[in-house]
Image 1 (cartoon, rainbow, N blue to C red):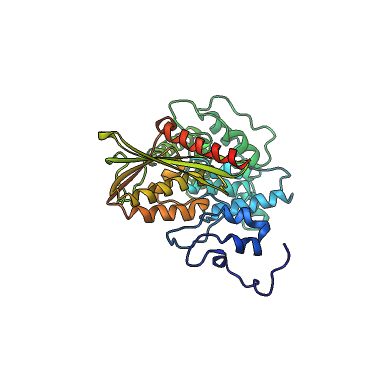
Image 2 (spheres, rainbow, N blue to C red; image 1 turned 90 degrees about the horizontal axis):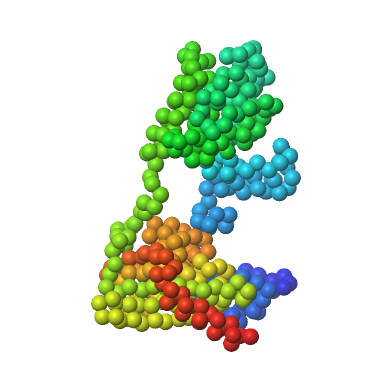
Length: 392
């Protein structure tokens, strides 16, 4: 593939579509971008006129956040061998995924970067005359405040962990955090991995600031108790997993209508093809109608699941089914539909599914286990195997 021609140098993506549609024009693609044909055809645009949207490819949701941008920058720096500690620090696992409030994650992040205003840094900048720790008289560094100060070490000994911790040789905050973050808390505290340790870090920092600025002293056990109480209160206030937020335009998660449509897909990575199938049924009179279809240039099984559901909805509308429930064994797909979230590879498909939903009087979407749709799964696999056999 060489440089663009004079005629195609200003071409736009929509010029690769067939006229007055959002379907790819194979002749134009082969003429202009033959080497990129598989990648282009694997993009499944909306067929219902869904709006274009900027997406962030570094996250499956397609939404850019400061957190994901920071993570991308860290990964790039580590890939270029510029990690200042000479080793990879797992920022996402060690800090951003810890089940704590954002304020504690930011404290951990600042501490790991040595960005907290401890006495050692303040004295180096001539803000205070003495770098000594207010509790023990040693130089107050970040690692000293949280791990090597006698007060901090006694505090950690009172934390209900399975084993006693030793902080000998700790010179960097990251070394101490790697040690405490993996410790398991004893029941019945009920904290996730790293969560209790993070609350203790927060409590140590708060007690240190109270001592300096308000001359209020806390015992080691009081610091641990505050961490346990604050952490439990915060955990109890968090929403439970599985509490789905369902838009009003969709029926409640437990409601099933008279017509039920089950859809599924079988995907073959070797040739990026997928067999899809769906079945309409009406339990009261044993009515069953099934259909299958082949799709090519499928980049993932999730895209195939989305196309199977979209195709089933299109046929349901043509058959004039007004009230219908759709079932799929793809929890990721159903969750995205019900919660209104985005998945970058499914942007056009999800847009069409939401548009098609408005055409029904009532519609609901449900996740079901694979064994509940075994007949549709078998039909999808048979359709795929027949296509592969005929292609050989």
